Amino acid sequence: MQAGVAIEHEQESAAQSLQIKVLIVDDSKLQRKIISAFLPRVRYEVREADSGQPALDMCKVWQPDLLLSDWMMPGMDGIDFCRAFKALDREGYGYFILLTSKSDKEEVAEGLQCGADDFLSKPVNGVELRARLMAGERILEMQRALREQKRIVSETLEQLRTVHDSINQDLIEAKKLQQSLVREKYRQFPNAALSFILHPAGHIGGGLVGYFPVSKREVGFFAIDVSGHGVSSALMTARLAGYLISPSPEQNIVLVQGPQDTVLTRPLVDVISDLNRIVLDEMETEHYFTVILAIADMDSGVVTLCQAGHPHPVVRRKNGQIVQNGPGGLPVGLFPEAEFEEFQIKLNAGDQLILASDGITECPDSKDGILGEEGFEKILTDLGGVKGANLLETLVWKLSEHSDDAPFPDNVSAVLYEHSPPKAR
Image 1: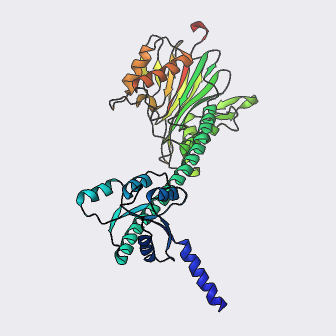
Image 2: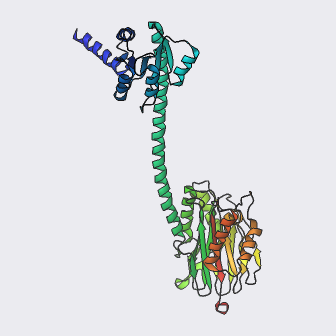
Image 3: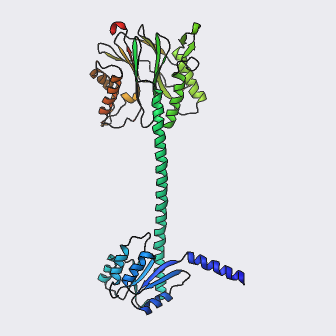
């Protein structure tokens, strides 16, 4: 017996948790009782009010799901009550049914315009009443489902915003770290000077420029452009930097220890061939990269280079003549049997050598065109006489002007080597 009572109590509790709040508003107590009698209490929590104003006051503290209101009432009638109810600030939707004996189309239109969702003719029929309520419940259920979906979307967006802010902060820090790989923007040597600039596409990218000392007479420098953009390209760039930046033969793939603590350079074709093998055999990546690697003799002005898919080196002679030439070569990390070629450029006093990424020559304009090699030469011609870091910074400014200040879609990086033996100074 006790078990049966417990089961009945659990069923009643479950029903109570699913109850729908219904408010009946009618100045006739008899009408309220008749309507209330049609509503099973296990399904509905029913309250009553005898006119519009008390009903409105009740709605402010107790939010009904369904409202059944007589149209004709003293004081605030059903139309005014409906309009005031719909103006309330409430969490969910309230389905409003007007009880009326009116059937004129204009009067029905007036009720709809004030916010009523449905009509029920008086005297009320129990079967029709329950059918109207079920229709209202379906609307309420859809509204609740939409509200829940909106809540989930809002929470998800907030979580995504938090994650995005965190990632954005990490990328800002990563950009600082990547920029730190370019240790100096300008480096003066007795007979030469090096300048560098690096503008990754977006927060971080796959561009890198740098140098390493070899001896009092020689200096090495390079320009690298890894395919793609973003974190994976930047990580590959950082790993490549580990092979080239250090001045120590134990850590720099270009350098070897010579006799009597001297430092020598390996053949540049061997260096890039080794990098090609490392990328293909040791790095699990789909990325490849282009590179120009250079060793400059700062006394003679002879620069030995190896070009692997990177844009041609640009020489601007002291007299303003501009030459772009090189063997081209294949990018690193695509073909196991790729071969590379060394070549030399002889610089005279006052000449400049620029190793630039294709983010410069392929910089777009507002008309779907690109700067191109001729456009690059024109900028350099216009900047005749500008030297050092000022030349590279002005070059970036000119690129921004060319692209109408749009963000660069690709890495913009360059190395400027200037040969300046004592007689030129």
